[in-house]
Amino acid sequence: MSLREADFVIVGAGSAGCVLADRLSADGSNRVAVLEAGGSDRSIFIEMPTALSIPMGMAKYSWGYHTEPEPFLDGRVMDLLRGRVIGGGSSVNGMVYIRGNPQDYDGWEEMGAQGWGYRQVIPYFRRAETRAEGGDDYLGGDGPLHTSYGPMKNPLYSIFVKAAEQAGYAAIDDVNGYRQEGFGRMDRTIHKGKRWSAASAYLKPALKRTNLELVTGAHVTRILFEGRRAVGVEYRRGNEIVTIHARRAVVLAGGPINSPQLLKLSGIGPAEELREEGISVLADRPGVGENLQDHLEFYFQQACIKPVTLYSWMNPLGKLLISARWFFFKDGLGATNHFESCGFICLRDGVPYADIQYHFLPAAIA
Image (cartoon, rainbow, N blue to C red):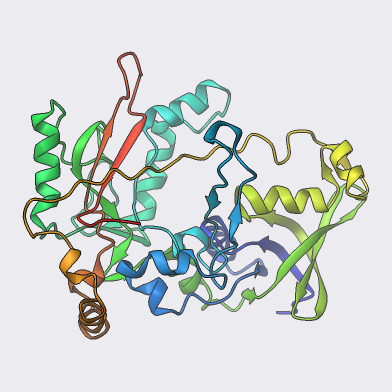
């Protein structure tokens, strides 16, 4: 493929970009180019589930974004994790596999997003997934994205669920099944002891096709237009500025931060803001880059009265033994993200469905 031209140019090899690359190149008739600012995910820190916190803080794999001081959080500056590697966030996240609540999707449909109700999206969730424990009416059994339960060998995982029952909450079999509210086991994107990212599920198998090309280290700086039609992009790779034309479409898959940023750099966004930055306005779109919402995560820590936590492994020798076992056998404590039980509750009476999610971890976290 000439890297100067393709039918489809996909900006970003995160989760969405990986899936799109697979779908758009599937029948062989389209020439597809995927441009990713980051690089390869070939790293023990990404592949080994228990090492999940390491790539989160590495500039090689993360954009390192943070917020402005938050006025409702006493001026705190919050970190915003965004993956800068093939697979995007799925290559640097905690590997927790939790779908949105069915009423989330039904709510979108009620607000006008036709075709996004839960009854319409559940077939796609099932098509995407292969669950190690087998598929059913809610879970898939033959899709490219592998999910699995943790082994629950540490007694604290089950004790956490039992404590929730004693507090009056339900114990449930499957938080991704017919009922989300309650406490039970947590699904994870881990397969045969390794992280199973969107790159592993979709992009890498698709790269065997001759009509798909991945360009890493390609930082897209603007979209190219002829009139009001997008016809390509310009990207920086090393010291070189490269132009690639799209015969059919430019697809932005850079996520909720990078995609609106690129739109603004290309002249699409709030006109006054663009003019202040010296950017020529192509289309005045005040909503671009606005209304981003994210959730907070709080840690509540409790000292354990018995020596059954992961504390005894939190030393150089323990970490070396965990890593060595994982390296040779892909099992043991290195093969889990340690989020193996979880819970969903309603914060107060009158809330229509669960709005608080619990992760349980048998270790202290700084």
